[in-house]
Length: 133
Image (cartoon, rainbow, N blue to C red; front, top):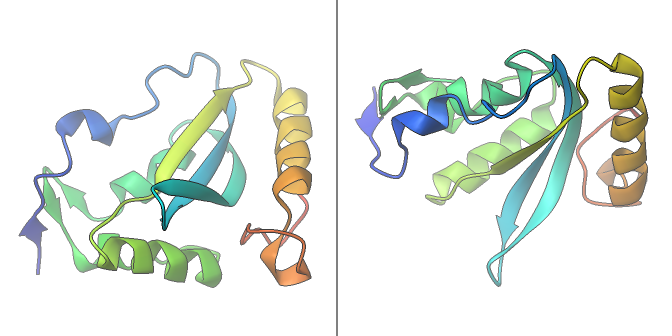
């Protein structure tokens, strides 16, 4: 069962067209009360990895149940994204271009995870289970 959601444009299907190099680090953030966003996941990507959360279930502008309830390697993150979408909101995904440097992407990923902290360790807001890098 799919439904049409006018909040999304076709431009959102390729939201990271500005990334020049193959490597980047992305941060997924969730809306919180007061109009702010909190980071919930930091990842290192290549190609279309970061767009997975936008692409799941897309068929034009029709959204499928899989889009509303993603299933990836991280059940905590999936549940949080599903809760955000179930409330009629959307996560924010911001990517930092690391060009051709896998090393730079690993360093930045690790630094951002350290900065935001990991939820399961009680040190922050991220659902990351590893320290990155």
